[in-house]
Length: 279
Image (cartoon, rainbow, N blue to C red; front, side, top):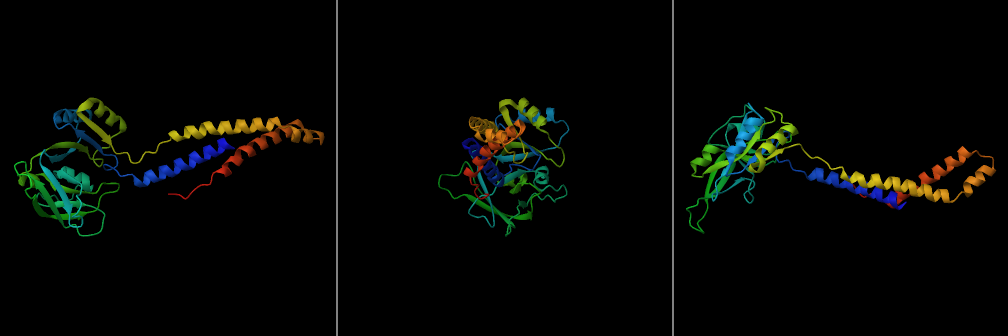
């Protein structure tokens, strides 16, 4: 009974934990997208790895400010918190919106969000290396276009690279992104790219939430133990079997009664666990 209760408890806890993890999962990219994060000191190695393993594939480039440039982005409805910013060209905008025909304007930001509110402007705050300590950060507000993210996409703010460069901010290559709308990458492709990258980058394939089934080992070991223990406990007492045989029952019926008692003893362990509410 204790072994059965343990198996049921593990199953309930693991199932609830998996459901909670699934609800809290935040994708790092669009489903099926390959994101290759590069070593800033060796970006050419990452570019060569992607070109050799995925020849002829269009790749979007994600840029980031060069240290010690510090840049934060916020929309009109999130002035107190910074939004995730993507800096790049038209290929990166096409990846974020999932729409190849979306208009690209080098002087306008794009807020990819499903949240209601006013996101028609984007505020960029940054500081330059030559700014003295304590100097107020430079702030600039630019117009923005709002677009909902594609199915399973990420919410972010897109900034045209030329606009950021025009503010005097230096940029460097941070990541290469394979748009799943243009090319479907497999796990084998990711592994080959990662093997060629070595220590000079990290290849990540967005496959959505992948549950773990390692917890099945515990119920799998507990259930046989429960059945064996129940059968051993039943065999120790043969009084019901003897009574059945004396009443004219067959040996097969006696063995069936023993098996039923063993199954019932094992099943009784399930009542020791009371399932809680589903998270």
